[in-house]
Length: 534
Image (cartoon, rainbow, N blue to C red; front, side):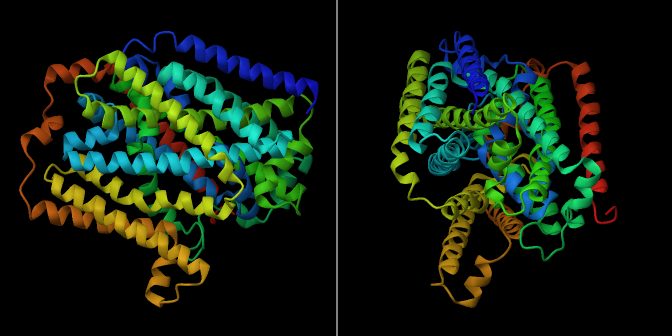
């Protein structure tokens, strides 16, 4: 790292700090200001925050590494996310904003019962603390160690403390506006690396000719170990539905919009941004394989940063990596504190004042920051493979949650008993899969039926678990009493309430056009990168 690169990094931290300070000035006035940004944040800032919250170090390292080893197919998850964001904007957001909820568990209570709320709150917090925070800290520390040569403990502490500071004092408003800056820094850094990598290969023509033609096919055979086309087409949307439409970390941003149409436009804008990672993360990985054939896939991105980038540009790309890390970490801190306060503290102290709720949110964020610091001694004991397993837990618990949310909105007959039975049964089936997978890989489970259950492709397993969840929800709901009017009130919102949060008719018409355009672009990409073309 040269002096100019260090200057770029310092400028990045100063910029993030200034934006965090500016945006936090009015965040402590009420719980809505702290947790939902006051409900008046613009669609562009929210859309950029949706994108930045999603992109983290795992994307930089993982997408480039998978691109280097198997090509563009991993990019399907990015482009399918475009449709999930449209689903969030057109189906889920109107219900979320009309009901005035702060959290997704709170929404489940309004639609079903308090048991569903408690279940989702606990599962979400456990997943955030033991997977999202720990993985972000671990990946971030490794990136800083690999690229900057920082001691792993120093890098992790700097990341946690710097991110926690503006999250504690600024709330969601600070998180969204810092994400806005970080989104474009990480995109800019990615574009530079992609351009330089393809240029060093010899240009786009030699780049395509030098790669395995199969690398540019999005649609893999049904027997492909990672990305079978059946799993991509039917399984990936289930995981995407859970992540983009029901996960607190993502959905909370849309609740900061002034009305439904602005929230919807933010999801459309985020969808257009999700078109980009394939070209700035996966393609460089393929180019890196041609330039550095002996480098391990997970080291590909860091190697390209170190070996290809000139002075100054390296600082920008590293700033992009830091932006991805800090935006994801701040989103986890903020969303976790919202769950703690709104789903536990406020239920325990229903008469708590607005100032007390804000203080509770700040305190819970500080506790989360401390938990991240306490995790550091265990980082060296954790293997990369274990982190893969920890992430896979989310894939095994998400289909029942996706089924409950989706049927809860599409089928009024779905009731609380059916929902909680679905969540519990789905969790048990997912937990059995997780334990069986660990045991099978370790060699101490050899019973064929259990081995077969453990080795189903995870996308195919998502389809199976989703189908079972839907079956349980429908069966239990039909064999028990219908939901009360109280739990169907979101479908019967008054005209006055709907008009208050609806938004402009002109913006609605534009949103329709933009949504169709986004879907058309993804369809074109699917055709271009298909076996028929290559």
